[in-house]
Image (tube, rainbow, N blue to C red; front, side, top):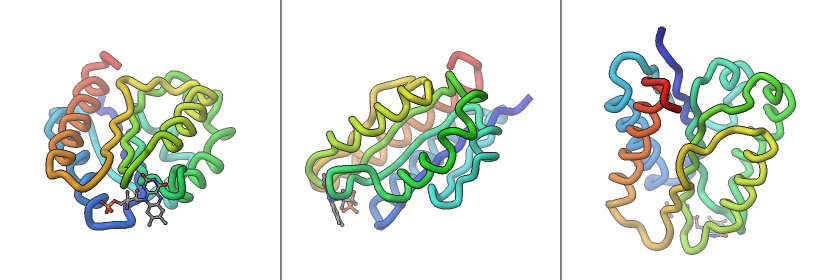
Length: 154
Ligand SMILES: Cc1cc2nc3c(=O)[nH]c(=O)nc-3n(C[C@H](O)[C@H](O)[C@H](O)COP(=O)(O)O)c2cc1C
């Protein structure tokens, strides 16, 4: 049976859009045909989307020392409705931060601990001036996530 890998993202810039496309590209390469990977705006992601996900990648820029309002809105809307059913959900976090990222990482870690979702690797924080290598890092994370979800290792 196929598995669903959902990328929940807020992409306010060309660079962040490239990063999320790279996550999706990696996910599609890593999961063979057993994994259906798709990306979705955090604002448009519903409780049902989360309930039907077998793994989630969360992507946000850091703005004003915190995650984007869009990702916060996502957590606010889904937190209690998915709480019981999605404990243990494998997830990974990617943060694009112009110069820091720690406030966002800390806040997301705390919410994920509350939700009891399972981060399968350390958060990827792409910090500082733009580097093309961020795209390779995103591809690799997407690939790892899809391979783990597809094989059931996660
Ligand atoms: C209103 C605003 C607030 C920001 N605040 C932070 C911040 O607190 N920490 C940080 O590391 N970067 C901050 N940035 C930079 C963004 O993280 C960065 O521009 C964003 O991730 C998009 O990446 P890009 O500039 O490569 O497209 C801020 C950007 C904006 C527009």
